[in-house]
Length: 326
Image (cartoon, rainbow, N blue to C red):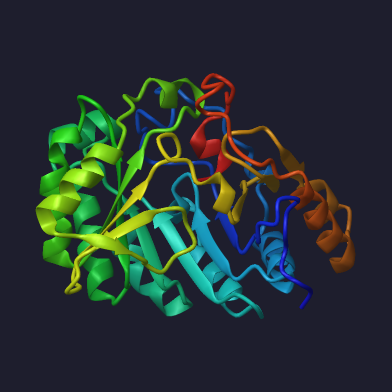
């Protein structure tokens, strides 16, 4: 294995978020326009063999954490087969999955058996009517069923991702805290990001005052929770509950960014808030060697920008989150 991937700013890139589809069975208001249909053709999706080659290359260069995302990744057929192949690659130490959990009940056992260890589940409300309004689908019952099945299968930790939106679900935070406490889930509150017009219109809420209120109410202290992402955590001193805050706008975390994203069509996106990208699919389909693939990835990491400009240029990013990869 070579030395770990590093960008121009000395950041080690040890985390790859891997989109296996840009399709989703929800239409979350902050993620995807209501009539969105600009999907990649399946023939342009990376095959399992191609995904495995890219993951193996990153793993050779010291990247150890990999997260399967979408769209909704459980819409990709035979996903547990891919997960098993990735888990067996040298250097893959942590394989996790982000999902909206609508399909999780029927896939949880096979994913656990394949080696997926951790889950992040998007859940923005515990109210059926609100879920319908946010996701444009009456899906709360299937999401809760998926969560309980996953818990019974032994996934740990299970993290609940709640995007906090002004006038939409901000008043539900305490209920979500109680729900996560009762099930042993880790709650993560997330600020909206101006990804496309949908993200810009989602009702930004600064999480810093909410963090202070919850810290005081529950007697929480700064802590660390395993994972490769940007959340800053508060934990109960006696254990038993953790809550994370993902604050790309109010307290950006660009100086410690350790991740890049691979979209379903084989494009490496180096930053959510910039257009810097590198197309790997043409190389893969032209018969690139392992050494050439490694060098191409290193070239891509070299153009990773220092930081996003969501504050300075909120209208800059036109692509939507589901197309980029979660």
